[in-house]
Length: 282
Ligand code: C2E
Ligand code: MG
Ligand code: MG
Ligand code: MG
Image (cartoon, rainbow, N blue to C red; front, side, top):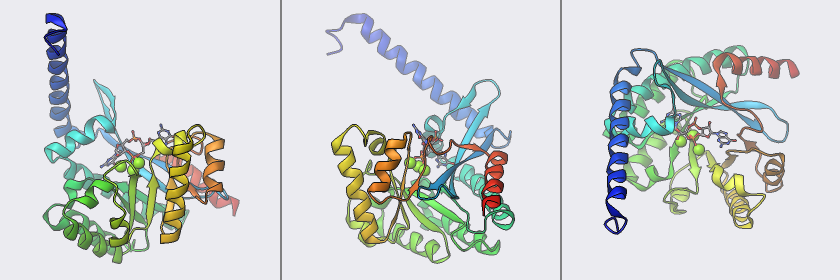
């Protein structure tokens, strides 16, 4: 126990907790003003058709550049934004940025472009008002045809089933695609694949990255792909870093992928250049 490790280890432990706490508080305080101070921007990571290398989809990812602290990872601040409820305002900002971008890109470079946006369970409270509002706004902009996908986590599907079903059904009917993010890492239950209509299933990068070296991970990836294909759900493999992983995924019947091998998340201008290149290929 802690006592057996002596005074110093106890002291060290509380010191660590103190710095963690102060770091959290510092991030939360800065997070409150980050939107107004325009410290956020979006980056876009292409989702590639593995069979022909075409880019017709991307995932939007938030970046926070603080003038003194520097870049703060979404892994560090998104959970705090969720705890404090700030995620709702931040997500509305994200939605506005991304929907304007996708409209512009569809009109000029790629009519079938789809951009996916990560969403948090908090956003599905209050009858999922925030998400149903997004669908309305997309409709007003003429962006009904799967211009936007929302990424949800498995854990959302486990809580408040009937409300979440009705929100997802409603926005899906209005043309928003639904993707399950990080599939296989949450409270996985096959029943929700039956009860919900889902368009995309994103295999978590932890499975993909061990595919070539671990038979169990390879088996899980293959089984997920077969199951999804039979259910009529498109699979997107996340975190593809090697040619070998890409080949194994394609052999297993997965045709969409995302990862550093294919492209890193990039600024809006850079992604636009890619779309222009794609356009000139055809
Ligand atoms: P996610 O939704 O699963 O996003 C994929 C993450 O994997 C991104 O990290 C991306 O940069 C990273 N990634 C892509 N390809 C590779 C690869 O080949 N290898 C490795 N190791 N990583 C790869 P990022 O941007 O740091 O985001 C981390 C998480 O933070 C996201 O995981 C998502 O849960 C959350 N997040 C990011 N942006 C947003 C946002 O706009 N809204 C919300 N609610 N959450 C966000
Ligand atoms: Mg995601
Ligand atoms: Mg996510
Ligand atoms: Mg993911």
